[in-house]
Length: 490
Image (cartoon, rainbow, N blue to C red):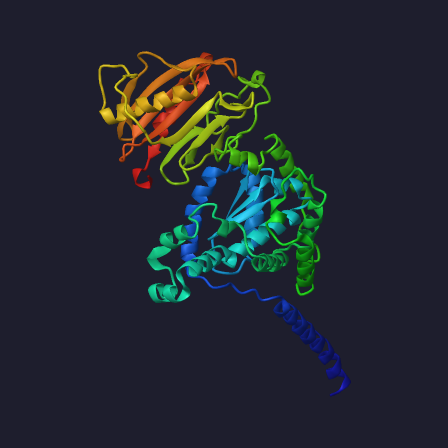
């Protein structure tokens, strides 16, 4: 080979060596394999969907568009490198101060507000989320359910009856090992499974532009956290020294980005946003029922004196569509949406809903929700020449009675009852008023009800100060006229 040929060959050979080394590095990372599982990936999704509904009935989910967008952006970026069955991931923030996170089968990931508030950069938040994504992609929840049921029924019986897969017996097996929702099998894992999630989480981080070093730095940060705060994300997982050592070992096998994402400025903005909500409760307080666990969080009113300072309704409107498809309703574009559980939603202007005297109050705004009547009454609250079916009237009266039990200061305004058409079916309305001792305001509450095929109600509660009732009547009427109900979704 002449010198000219050698001069060309050297860089080519060097490139080939570099490529070989790079390939070797990529192949050197630990291969984490999913364990035995009776369930199919689609059944993971079904179990996760149903468990998420149960979980969100018990937990106060923070509904803040900026916080949700922040966490979702990080989560979806990580999910692109999750591997596994290719679940569609969904991320939620729990309004709890505990430093904890968990994931349900099929892609349902929850992180407590305490994680965000104690993280120092985006990589630390991403480290927690990547760990939970790893649990999902490796299907650890249904793996543990499979093992638990196998221990009860015997693997030979399982294999003979089910052919190694659950088939139509999903609910039977899940119920046998603890049921849907916050099942311990989905929340607490063995040391081996936690180590798998750490290793796979580190790989997901590196592949997504983050560094596993931030996962390690978060453990060190938690050592300095106020001990009165529950750091259950550590207590439910292997000891930090063990985790740190294993992650550091895996880092040597990974190709990390030269300038990993940390984005401290946006995290600082999100923390500032969270401070508007006051201090988050602990999970212990939520479990005891000493704070509302309604599944939604509302922005605070600093004091009763701020009530009444809301901006006038915008002349432009937006449409809210229920996430379950039951209804849609139009609302002024300068109002905010606070999503509740199931079909429930509160839509209100800034400052129209929040905390007064440690109690959540709605002074301006609309609530739309579903109601299951649990009793009939012969007393007629609704007056008028035309009477609708007894089922609708009795259900409406039952709802009014419940409202008055919760707010004894409210009295039905005689003669306010009306019957009209709402989205193709008969509806009823009535108005209540009274002085709210907590806010010191006279308030007006207008109730609109419409029956669903199973005799349940979909209802609207429109709340304003009494002095503003006439000014907001056009807004109320426009919102009522706009509602569309899809009974097939109920």
